[in-house]
Length: 179
Image (cartoon, rainbow, N blue to C red; front, top):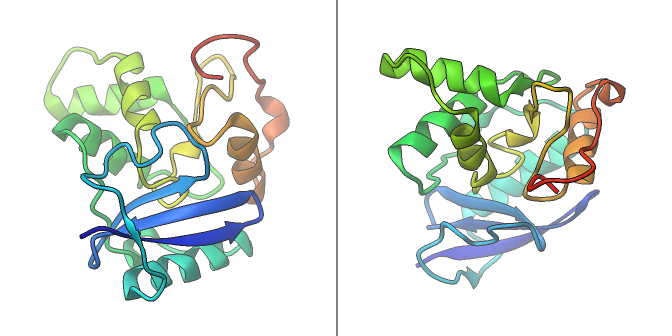
């Protein structure tokens, strides 16, 4: 059984999903791939301990504190490649950004490959089911672009500002799949 709870953030409503033990998803209302990795439609149940812990984590995050990812049991569903990308996302420090190309280089090194596609990395980042907690918002384009964010670029910018990133250095793309 999959359970869900709602969380009202300063950036809008968020749905948190769990199997009762681990977090499976954290989704902004209406974001791309909403519930995309869940095996079934969740049943709303607010009093599941892991969901309560996730709400407390988000409270601290939005209060400007820096809760640690390791405080929550995470179990995002995805391929081995996506899991490898999401693991790297979890290593990006608060207030920092990394490019899709940087992640591609890390994956290539880990797998002993000559290179890795930044676009493939972008697909994995975009399908991260545990938004905010697994910080996909900390990934930007090598050309200084915010690029996409499943929850919306305005939310990505707001999350980075909350973490102290000078977002004036980035631009919003005028067109493309990132919007």
